[in-house]
Image (cartoon, rainbow, N blue to C red; front, side, top):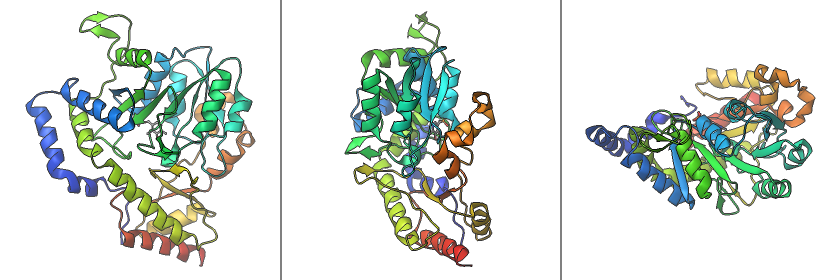
Length: 368
Ligand SMILES: *Cc1c(COP(=O)(O)O)cnc(C)c1O
């Protein structure tokens, strides 16, 4: 049996008619950049999340960068984020000229540790970027309390957490703004690069929209210099089609995760994902922790199973951040877990017998 890590082809098969129609409609109308399709998607996405504004942009990394710029963050400022994330989060901070300040992750959800945020706040701190990693909501009540106490802005990185909930509230609706990636492999994936920013702040929304479209107020009236980071028509049309299926895909991911966790609970070497009773995760990734990870990955590969690692090197331990002179012991959880994380195949269309097979092979490996 073959179990791919994700299967975008399987998903396309289920929505081919709708997607093909939508894409050709955009082409027939030559509505390539701006116009009705991005506007329609922005409205739909904002409405599902219950926020006032959604601004499409070119990708999830730009979304973070543009939002930080619109928040007025730049050289001399510090922005706090979590050691356990994809580099896009910290890259976007550095791109503004601000300093990245890393915080360790929690031992259970692997998300940002609120206690460590408190230790890392300085007089230069302007904002916190919690990441809802793997689609698992971060401790937003605590993060928001810390932000209020210290007068800090909060930007939620929701690149992996479309429609995840924390106490019934969607991730992305706690902070001052939130950013999304619609990279093809994300839970809501375009057929190319795409991203978006959501906020309830009118002034921030205006600034974000202007910055992402050459600083213009009207076609050739540029109030400031901005950049070109827009959601295009074809991607927006694809996203509108896929958005209608997102809740049921999220539900399918939760069902698959529950099945994995139940079956894996009998294998003592495996630590399955922790879920707060008040969290409704969306399992962008299903991440376990295991000993002898590299050997297990090879064994799974020999048996036709594709597993991944998210992420093999915690951000502060990357060469890119050697200039910060961190020691691995500065981030005890993130540094220890980077050698243990293992992401199992996870996508809404995954079949029960595929999950059974993956777990059977893991059991076989540990009982050898
Ligand atoms: C994917 C991702 C991003 C960046 O999104 P792109 O659309 O690829 O630029 C940012 N943060 C996290 C946590 C991500 O997983």
